[in-house]
Image 1: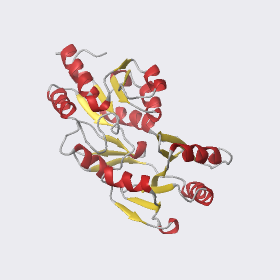
Image 2: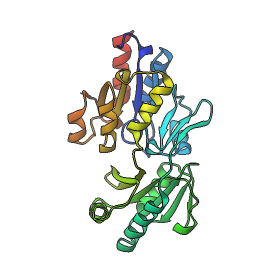
Image 3: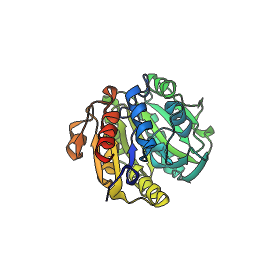
Image 4: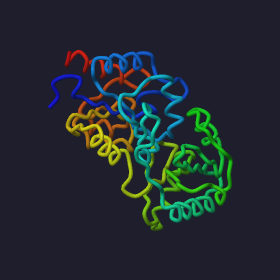
Length: 272
């Protein structure tokens, strides 16, 4: 039961929810997060970004709880600079999926994100170039057979038409112990089986001694939907697709218009 801000944990997606890759966090969002936490609320992020990219994007903004990173593969505490939980891909299955895609689609960008946070660009294109630059990700150009072990996830990057063709190809083959999901209209990812933002949220709540009914999730895309369904309350920003808005308890302004800050201010007014 929520009675004060101290009873609330807000878990927020980053890209196109909290911030945009090029403009960063709107000032109103930053101010609202700081006020919300100063008054006792807890705030953290759930994102596909690796740890160092999250750090760069936050640009000094403090989180009051560990962050869900790498799409749920890594739970990281920025206060203690400690990896709390990490999950690895079945590299044999993921490698075969990459080879199948690269053979059929030589223009699809391929990134392998390892648990330490570094990104290995196996096949580059305009989308991978923009991805690593905009999200300030440490990266290395590297052939697939030279990528080190302990993979957190894989990202395929291409235009929406080509990604739809990639999904069709993937759907014709069984790859054990991994699954695939779209995380943006230009990204399609491989994740470890049974690992994701929703699973990581359960782990986070156990560590924080917080009931899921007191969690509020703010998101914008299809890969946030399981996370939103799991929380006690869910919020979609105005730029979210209709399917995401349909499952949300509330819809706020668009990311670039400060929808996250708008919602946090409403919580401050309601519970103080």
